[in-house]
Image 1 (cartoon, rainbow, N blue to C red):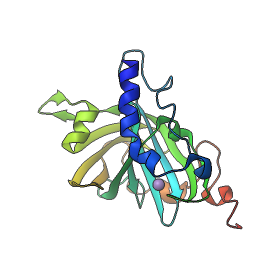
Image 2: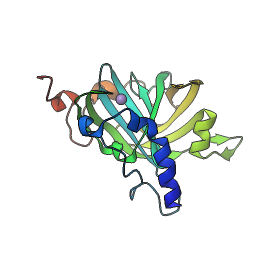
Image 3: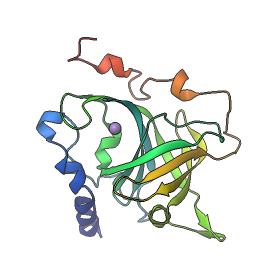
Image 4: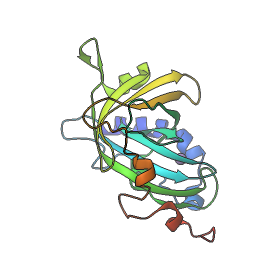
Length: 211
Ligand code: MN
């Protein structure tokens, strides 16, 4: 089982590795995708989510869900909203290694050059159902609709991801489910830009840019 998962993650991360020179980028190389957090005692895949605020050529929020030994990933230009009426474009990006969930710092050059802070992190629970039956999260992603309950520092309650366009860079919409945690007035993207791990902002991580 463990070897099988290694193999799966290796294949899934080929695109991630092809885009990066770990020596130059300073990002995790993904050589240890399966760590203690990657497989739960009951054999299910891990259940972490992370949102990274990434100031690159354009600002976006990388929304990632731990599924099957990798971080399934979407780039959300406007970041998540707590208002159920907001539909936030989420462009699917390459799977990332699990150790990327802790990464913050400066990517000095190459793909994604800029700064990354861990904007939110926590556990998630899969709530996806189809005709009253629970749908495993990997199947839900294949089908193009997943509902998860987030237990983070800034994000709480249920969010839905729905695919609207297939393709190499599939497009999804990230929408807050209208539950007790929905909030039309509070915008955490605006109010709380800093890292939940270090309290730092993207600007404070910039070393090469002179500010
Ligand atoms: Mn990014």
